[in-house]
Length: 181
Image (cartoon, rainbow, N blue to C red; front, side, top):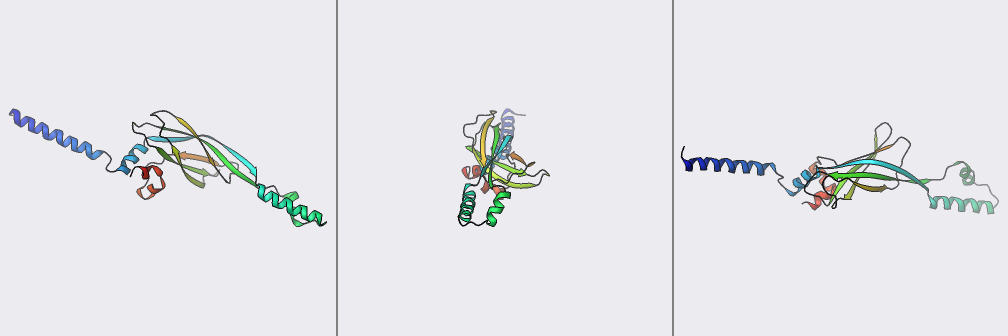
């Protein structure tokens, strides 16, 4: 085989390998985000449930009871006030750990959070954006997120994940895809 012919064959092989390698990469900005996003992970480190009495409702009830006492009446509301617990608002503080194993960083990541009952039935679902611009590769970073007005019952649990893959029709619900398009 002659020297120029050998170089031509090697050149064609290198060109084909380059084209094949380019075909394996992300084909659009959204695909690049999806590929980078797949290298992120989140896990729940714990949660705390806080309860506060709902002040407005308690104030209205107290005023109604006070007006009934002034009139010398025992109202149905006053009778109920002795037996019904005060309404409370619940909020949950989630301790979420996020890390990535990518040389590329996303400015933030949407984490899917779900709440399930003791039997594993999902009760609620949230998609929460976390600013991850400063997270370096392989470093675990802790975030605290507060879920307001949660109907938590003993035995309920919370689960977090960086969902992958995200179907194209749902990408509009994930802020990082908007940034990458």
